[in-house]
Image (cartoon, rainbow, N blue to C red; front, side):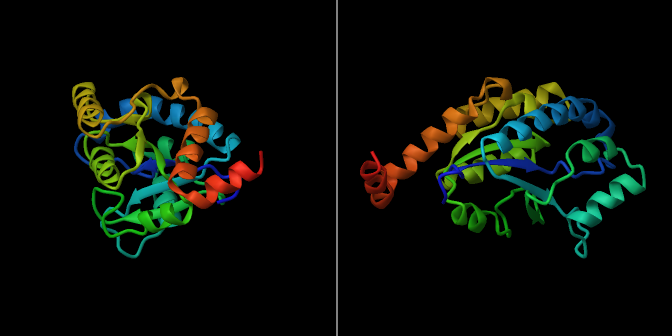
Length: 210
């Protein structure tokens, strides 16, 4: 891990999404303002040198990749087109395809996070009460510090979203403050200090550099 890369990652869950399913029209209503907040958060994450990881369902299309999913949503003018246009990954972003709800199930996400020495996750995306919720619990069981800004997740209704937020906050010890209230530089410093405490070599290096 370089000094420029803090042990924090921003996860975007299932934002490359056609929303062509029952209830997708209602989800879109909440997903558009969510996507606009994620755009701002992603920009700030880049400025703080925080890696951005897209964790996205393959939606049962087993011969797909991220480019296939993006092109399909945009070319066919599907319901989720606006979300995809706002949140299209760049070449600097990491991409993880998942087959089921959790970002950790049968994917290389955990290997990637270990490679990047990540101990803190800022999770965003859809649906808050399904894939974000399941991924949050899996991350909690693996010992990650969790931020899930409530203005950066969306579900089919406010009630479902609020229920998911309450469960994640109460069970998985998630910090659910709005994205605008998260000081990314402070979060990065705290995560780096935690890594040093857990790694004696990093701690000695930090003390020697004083």
